Image 1 (spheres, rainbow, N blue to C red):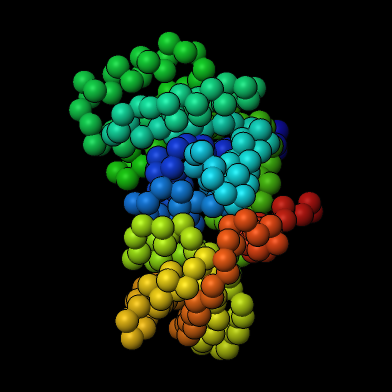
Image 2 (image 1 turned 90 degrees about the vertical axis):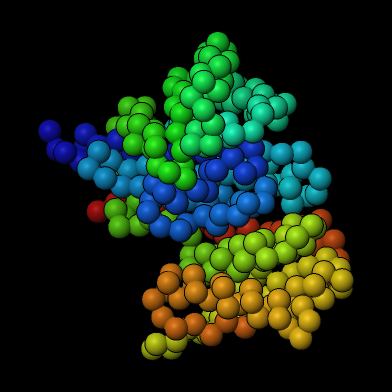
Length: 307
C-alpha cells in the first residue's frame, strides 16, 4: 500500500487557561518561534497555527486564546474562537499548569471540553516546578472524572513528556495524507508574525493595563534586496498610555523597536528598518471594525493543493 495513504494527519486544538504554557509547548514542538511567549496572561489573542510534519504524518496545531472571563468585545471574540477551534479539531488537548493551585477556571474549562465529542488529551504542564508527590493526587483527581482519553504529565519548558504527547496524537489522528506542504511550520504570513513580535516586546516591557490595551497593525512593508522596511502602528486607548509607550525622549518606543528588530531579522534573514508609531484609538477593544482588521491580519494560508 502507498506509504502516503498510511500516514495520519489532522488538527489538534491546544486549550488552556491564560499562562498555562500552550505557546511554549507549540514552539518547542515545531522548533521555531511561532507563538509569542510572555509571563503575562492572555498573551495569545488569535488562533496560532503551527505544523509538525514527520514520517508518521502531519499535525496541525491550533494554539487558542486562553479561556477566561471576557470583559470586552475583543475578549469575547477570543474565547469564542478558542471554542470554535476545539469543535473543528480532530483532537482536543487541555493544558493545565500544575505549579499553581487547580481552581474554578480549570474546572470550568474541563466542563466545556466534556461537551466536545472528540478524543481528549489532558496535559499536566510545568511538572519541573513541583514534587512528584504533589503530581500524583492531581493525576488521580482528573482520572476519576473519565473526561480524558489520555493524561500526560510534561514540561513544555524542559521538553519532558513532549515525545509521549506526540506519540499519543498519532494514535488518535485519522488516516490522511499531509494537508499542507511538508516544509511549512506555520500558516501565518510574515506580516502577522512581525506584528506579534512587536506586541511581545510591549508585553515584556510594560506593566499594569498597558499590555492589554495595545494592538499592532502593519501599515506598510517594503522589500529591497538586502533590506526590509516595515512601518507599524501601535494602537492604545488613552493618551496617557501613548506617553508611556513613547517614554521619556522616546526611550521606550526605541527599546521596543530595538528588541523586536532582533527577532524580525532572524525571521526574515535580512536587515530590517522598523518604524513604529503610537496612535490613540479610544475604546478600540469594542471597535468591531478594528477587531476585524486585526483578525484579517492573522488569517492563515490556504491548504495544500492536490496534485
